[in-house]
Length: 451
Image (cartoon, rainbow, N blue to C red; front, side, top):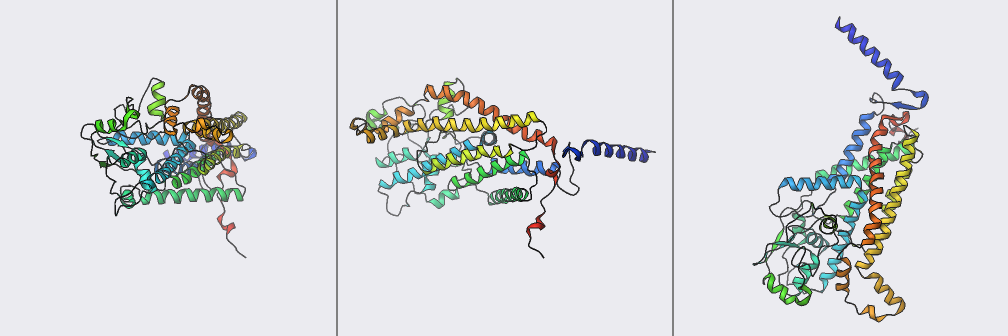
């Protein structure tokens, strides 16, 4: 008795699927689609979600955590940055590019030091390691705190610490880079790109989820190149012991160190600004970053000061290209006309917001580095501005985020967040109704020469 009933129920469900899920007259298939001969809904979702996870988790190279920090705090921080990478991968790429530029700058700065005999020259890996909090200063009269490359360079110039006996290979040995994870990420992203190219050549429909995943893949590949020399998941920093107390070092520094510090006692050299956690959030009357002073770790969100070199031009072009990738889906088939119009509006908003952000940040970045004053002096031969102490001017201009930038960037950030949130939600909602061709697999045999 039970068997005929089950057979009848299965026959009924199959007929419903044929009516509701396989409406080829409209060129779409609604609902969940299995994979009998081609690919199904699960195949599309699994391939994209797995690729996005690899791109946003494995590619992250965060700074050294605070000493004695629990694994739970480290995991939650990486999880937050993974969500940040999902919502705005181009901004995470900007941080990576800025860190690479700072590491290269440190190499130039360290060239003027007289190194001890047998010491290895300062390299980009050393720069990354220092700027991620790899060196911790342990004075006799103060709590230990991390120092970056600029602060270390200042201390070395004045003989307050010994040159670190740490080779580039030893720096890399501290990295927890998992060859299997990176190989898996490269294989998965490479295969995903090949799949997209194959579908484009054979004129098979590509879903919005796949287009969005492709944007993550491209950002990840560039992030890997920018962070190629940055150690991954370093947990134990290198301790440096100064030959003077912090009080003596501050006295020797003179009037430059007369102001109370906000982050570490060496703020007069570099105060780790501008940063979201240490500057923007306090102005907004909330804070989730490290509250201890001196800072127990260097934050990951220091705004990149990239300058006007090739890295800045490349990042701008890549960011605009990333935003433009969403326009590829302009004429895609969406479940409803409203969703198509919202996608188009969100694509325009993301591109416009990114361009506005670049204009504002480039202008303010010029003030932080004193670029506009130097250019003005060169154009108009004004020696007065040329006599301004560049380091002090940079410190003054970077001390606070200017009011005008907050006023402009607040609505830009809100619009960008809304548009990006819609994109992230829509790529999954659109899976409920896709063109029939979206479930056809690439016929790889057509790419093989045959007679």
